[in-house]
Image (cartoon, rainbow, N blue to C red; front, side, top):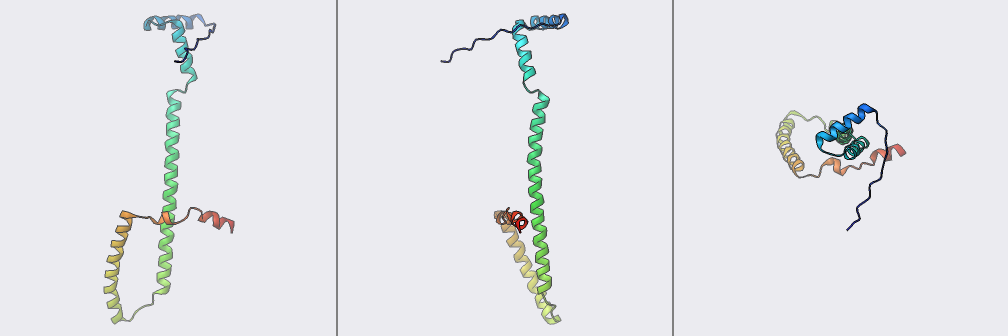
Amino acid sequence: MTKPRKKQRLSVYLEPDVMKALAAHAARRDQSLSLIAEAGIASFLSPDAAERQEAVTTKRLDQLDRRIARMERDLGIAVETLAVFIRFWVTTTPALPEPAAQAARAKAGERYEAFVNALGRRLAQGPKLRQEISEDIEAVDDQR
């Protein structure tokens, strides 16, 4: 069992109006002047509700900022991926003569359907592309 701590004595001088208000408040609460003064000092020394709310809001804003940064990164990856794919496709796909173009369009419909199904499975199960790309790529590029 821990030993109760002994309270320390403090003498203060109060303006008459403040002393009168303290006495009236203590009487209304049926508490001692010392207890009301101690609670007031403790309240003054502890962060107030506005400061606590500001701390919570700041923490939440920091979390949102990190999420937005990740979303910007993911969007950048998606845009770059699409741009690289389009450049590759445009530079490597020759134009076809008409009989072959009709067959290619039919095959393209099948390939597109397979692509949509594969994309749906990937989005549902993962892993996501952003998980496969290292966060350290920018650091490596900066060192070059």
